[in-house]
Length: 250
Image (tube, rainbow, N blue to C red; front, side):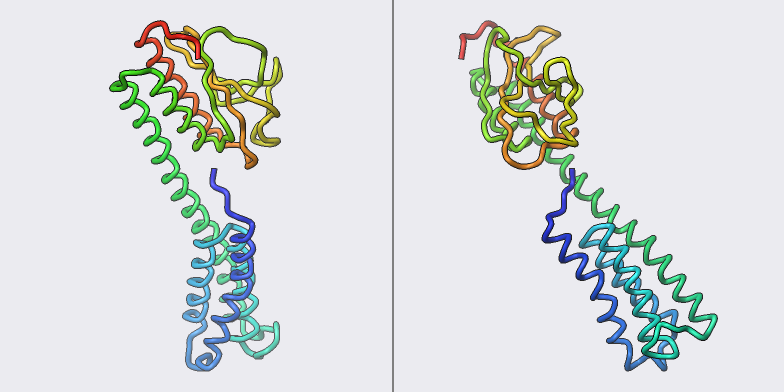
């Protein structure tokens, strides 16, 4: 899941508020000879730039700021929020509407770009594990590799693998990417990981072969997409265990 940092969000909001005003001020010396449509287009470009770097909220703030600054600096009577010409009123309203629309589209495009990069990283993890599972001479090599992948993927503090029988009833990361605690479903997206270790079982053709014990790190819980990738990595481990035959306890 894409998460912008608080500092970036704050800077984007500040830019959304200030950048359109600075652009409008820069146009003040030319406002008598510059058409209001062209001035509005300049401000729209500024709003798009803010939205591409920040969030939807920053884009919306930028659109509101652009409409207000256009009114204050570039329409008669200058230096007030009054507009006397109907054409100027229409331009201000259109500037606000277009600014809001393009800000949302720009923010969405930025978020989709991040998702695309994340998807590529997920596929790379799965591909690396599949290659190793097919070529490694020791199943322990695969297990250690998947532990490292899970640690990076899920933001874990620690990860270990248990062969053999199930002991206890720790929280469990299930095949559909959800988390259960006992018989109850745990809303990991809303409240984060449950306390303690979380098990992720490795199967092959429905046969249980071992489990990863995951210790979450201090950050936010991984996205549902990342948890599904973790389940896929555990399944690849299960396949490698099945091909290797019986293994000793570890």
